Length: 342
Image (cartoon, rainbow, N blue to C red; front, side, top):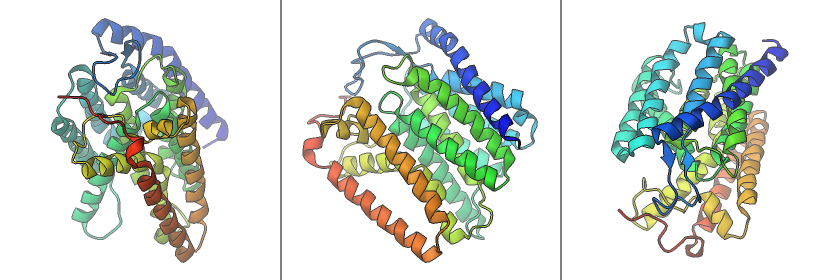
């Protein structure tokens, strides 16, 4: 795949999102697809903001897959119905607010369908075990990005970094179909970031955050490193999504410890705790983006080490992450009532 073609697709994908964004904002306002401030305790913005990010991402992604020729590939049919399901359930949630179990059902349906279409891990010989691992991964990463979408520009910035890394590794493994998907998603994220960065002109909403997470998770499942042993390559996708995974684990552990509902929105995410530590809003977002970039670099450094050393350093990284969870879960970094009332 010529290098200029990659940059052309990124350019067109970013331009498509920029051009579609004002239209999507207008449509959202006309349809009443708005995030109203103070409707719930965790909604801290001061004015109604359109939930247009999902519409922009879905439309721009489909347009660029058509323009780039990706939509003509047989592999695209494995992705299209599942991403339509994820987008539809997310958009319904943005409109009417679905029950958590309904949202989960939509995610499981989309994940099961894409696994049925052949997008699945091949870690063991048992197909049932591979199916279970793939299902947990796809649903987990989808929710991780949705959880991390707690502040303007945060989730889409993390997604852009992950997409850029996946672009590089799929090029190295000569999985050019996946490279095409990642460069489209990278360009989409760059364009959306312009409107979603603080102060946001529109929010991603569940439709946008879940769609980003699902696409990245599926691409990571298909990624197959060439020239590396499984002992040093198995953790690369995990490290690429380390910050969303960390944020999700922090919130889940914190809420389970306090016997609070896991799926209720709150002000107890990593971003909120960094702000309570004294960081400004923009600095907290940049801190999480910087952490993601550095861990992405570590992932590829470990990939080239011996299996023993790579997994030993991975264990050290996990211990650091567990310490960070304990550090950020101290009571004074939480509000007294970080959950909206029923």
